[in-house]
Amino acid sequence: MILMPAISHAAPYAGLVMDAKSGEILHSENATTPLHPASLTKMMTLYIAFEAVEHGELTMDTMVTISRNASSEPPSKLGLRTGQKIALRYLVRSAAVKSANDSATAIGEAISGSEAAFARRMNRTAKALGMTNTTFKNANGLTQSGHMSTASDMAKLGRHMIYDYPQYYNLFSRITTDAGMHQVSNTNRRFLGAYKGADGIKTGYTRAAGFNLVASAERGDQRIITAVFGGRSTASRNAKVAELMDLGFKRAKHNVAFRAPGRPQYLGNKDIGGVEVARTADPDLDGARGKTIRVVSAAVSRSLRPRSRDGVSGTDVAPLVASLEGDIETVLASVQTAETAASVEVAAPARIVDASVSASAIASAVAPDASIKPVRRPRGMVMAFAADNAVEPIVPQPEQEVVTRLSTSGGHQWGINVGRYGSSYAAEKVLLKTALMETSTLDGALRKVVNGARGFDANFMGMTRETADLACRRLQARQVTCFMIGPNG
Image (cartoon, rainbow, N blue to C red; front, side):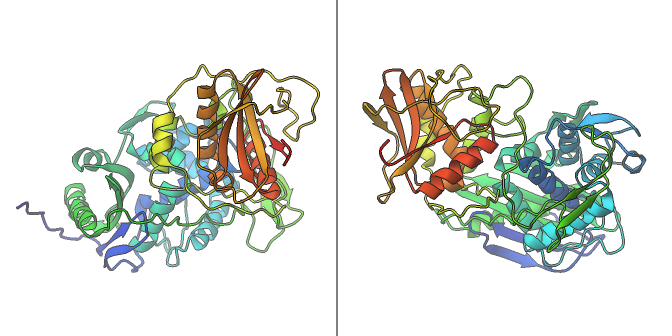
């Protein structure tokens, strides 16, 4: 029998254990008591950063100019200098891994123009996520009057981080990472190295808060999230988290149906109910001087996505998975436990088919292969896709079909084409990658490889016209070639 050391709390203690797949609370102690979250705050800063990148507010390659306010933050810090320019990706890495306060502040200022404006966005997002007992005053979690959260709210945020942005979640398990200026080490490396299945998420410490940790671990078909506030030391906190994790794995049901947490409405820097966003931009951020962005209406009329990184063509396979130095294996591992719900809103209504992607089929069929290239298409057909896409459309020629998924079309007669390729394997692989990327509109669609005289067409079939149109527009926003296929092919 292993005896866990007791925690003598320097700050009020709170603990919570959650089944990540279902959201069920398995254990709770003072979990709704408002306490100082310390650097657990950075989970929200990073969540909003991922949201901002997803919606095209900036990219991971955006060069951020560091303000005096950010550079003067106390440790833990990356060591940023006033006036220095650094890519957003390095700020994200150092905030996630090293828990750098200067990086977190710089992220907030880059997104909302000032830390105060960013704090308002944090609070709007917290409300949308159901974090009912949380108030943020800054981007980094340094002690400030009124800056409070709860173990329950932080566990909810951790669950959203895992399932809303699985392509970025691998950041939190990195023991070390390149932060541009130098390598940084993970503040959570002891727990990650000691507890089987642990892969995140975030530590936090201030004198007022004590030693905090929101942790997640996966074993088999189970994933547990544990939140602890008020530990007296790193060692005793980690021991308590391990004890609660063991409790969670013991109590959690096996083969429980996954229940998605639900993505919040995207509002960007807009106040709820407002129609104008006043943003004092960094004068050196992407060459834009301080500006006011006027929103014509509350509805989002088009999807804004970051452009592909320099040197990557829109016709390559690589842009099919948008991630922060992630790969298809990372996405596959996440999809095995979640359906990644896309949050981009478009003006046209659409019917979303609710069906899951077969994780076993994906895992067996997908393998990294950077050599796959689409076959050039013949000219002569008008397509609805981004004007900067240089690939010409094709006329599908259904001669021989390779079915890669059982049909659940229910009589739906429309489809989309996402390219023509040199082999059946290459086309199937692209279909799988695309299905992973655009789960909310393509789940339930029939994936078909059609062998024509000029190559293998990668098609999704069995869709309504509205769903096919929506899927194409969302893929085009990600720089993915797409056109619709009518009932007659």
